[in-house]
Image (tube, rainbow, N blue to C red; front, side, top):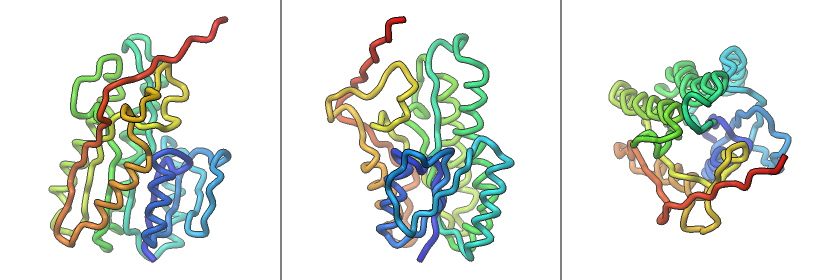
Length: 236
């Protein structure tokens, strides 16, 4: 049985990717700040409460996994957070949270696991964003973290490809997940205007099932229609 580490594994893309990997005979260590709302259970799904933005805590979790596992075969950097609006109105602590969660944590986690992934000739899959590829009005800080993650993946692929490590970036457009719970907009009700977490998990499977020597280094996934829905403001 191969071993995978998935961040942001309590719901959405991370949870669906964990399910998919387990169906492919992986044991999955899922990292998330809380699993209190995660009802899905499987003996191959090991839940680790870990805030990836807390680097000290993240290092501890990695040490814990490496003490248990002889090999790491796949790392999915999925955990992410976003805050949107005019840049001068975004709280400084929210900017810090985005940088730590979306960019710093994947850089650190990859650093901590890269030697193990070289040994296994494994996979590093980074969940970036469509915003990494274009201007993002009212989302410049978020887009910057995702563009940084994308560029890191593209650069790392060229750095480590001779070692057999596969580095892949997935750029999803709007996905139907709890990502938008704290925001003032969300995916539209039209099913053709959003991507499902299962679609991203299917992309992960497609990546892993490529023949040896063939890498899908970057995948962009978009809905057919471009629609979002603004949430109704609650009256005070």
